[in-house]
Image (tube, rainbow, N blue to C red; front, side, top):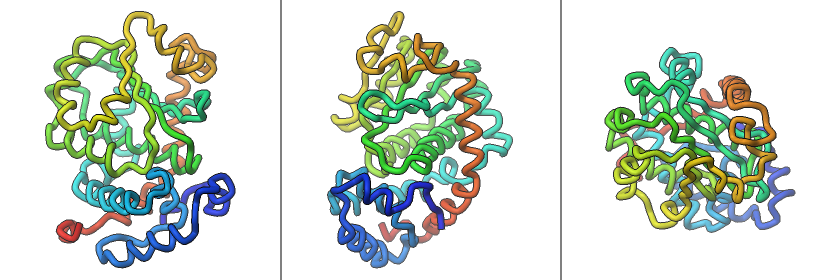
Length: 279
């Protein structure tokens, strides 16, 4: 069984709103769905915490999580950074969990291009590693007040947008909004360029109002970013006090590689393709 590093006992200690009876109800719910796997208390806690302890919403989140992970096999299987496709994409893109949370205690997930040639960009693999990074944050820290995405659009071109699969965009957005066991608080886009406007046209039909209102765009010298994020939690590349992105990227990649056993165990919890009709 896939296990997180923060124990259920530790989660109960830091989350007084957490109730054992809610976990018991959720476990019985999962048992009643023959296609759903048996998961740990720690995993159940991630779901109920992300839904602000609303049991009905948590049940929906669990169903969407397993449905979308089964449907998006090109994103949620083969999660091994030693595979050639993953090795290539971590050269093309930077993936970082910034080591210092913001003033609200939110963990910051950073992402940007390193190699901007569109032919090198493989959207399913890029999405795979991005969601691995989010999972790594959950595995290592357990529940947290929230997560923030910090996305650098420098280098984004129309050629990258043309490589997107509309079907996978739709499913990815559904997972982000309905199945991801995370309290997503904000999305900051720095170095916003013309191509960002084009990609927003593509994404907006798949966004609910809550997600759309979370997005903040920063142009020019990105000074507006500092009103949301203190310099103590930003890399040197962005006027902050943390080490450069290149070093932080290597650290995050090493962390994800160190979680290889978890990713392999979690992949065993996928629903068989024939069971998708049960959702």
